[in-house]
Every structure is written in structure tokens, then in C-alpha cells.
Amino acid sequence: MKFEENVWKLLKKIPKGRVTTYGLIGKRLHSKAYRAIGTACHNNPNPKIPCYRVVRSNGMISLCHSDECHKSRIKRLRKEGVKIKGNKIVNFDKVLFKF
Image 1: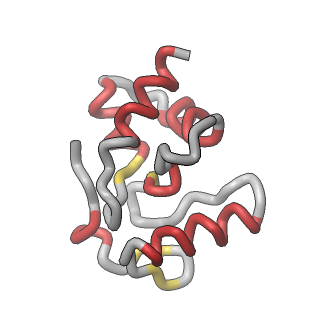
Image 2 (image 1 turned 135 degrees about the vertical axis):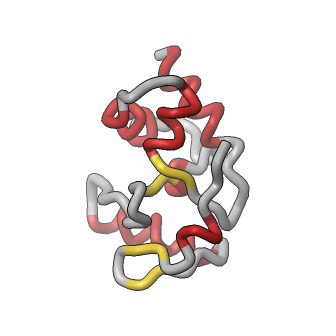
């Protein structure tokens, strides 16, 4: 649980309109447990924690547990000004947040 709480604390630091990667979160936590980071995002109990702002290192939007969830993630990112074409962030370098 402590690991997940540390992930959630970092997620709160990601500004609106920006994204980060599982790898950057891992680097900040001194961990290569990228799947555990994904699990922490999935287990996020607080809707105010923006787990939808975490993407793959190539700018691809990670798949959710459902198609509806995936579409919601893309919709929320677009609402914040993140440009997405298909399943990939267009302006990835511009919106990438590094801790």
C-alpha cells in the first residue's frame, strides 16, 4: 500500500494539460516496477488523482480495463488541451511532465 500511496502523491503533482510516463514515475521512485505503477493507477480510489495523465514512454495512451474507460481518458486529456491523434499524443514532447 505504501508504494501505491507514493505513486498517487506523484500523480497529484502532474499539472493539467500535461502527462508523464510510467518510466518517469519509476525513476522518481527509484523503482523499475512499472507494472506496479500501472496497478496503482488502476487501483486509484480518488477521482481527484489524475491517473489518466500517465501514458507510455512513446506517447501512446495506455489501454484501460474497458473501452468506455479508454475513451474517457482520451476525452479528459483532450479537454485539458492535450492533442491526440488515434491513440497517440501528437505534441508529446511539449506536454511531457518530468518530476
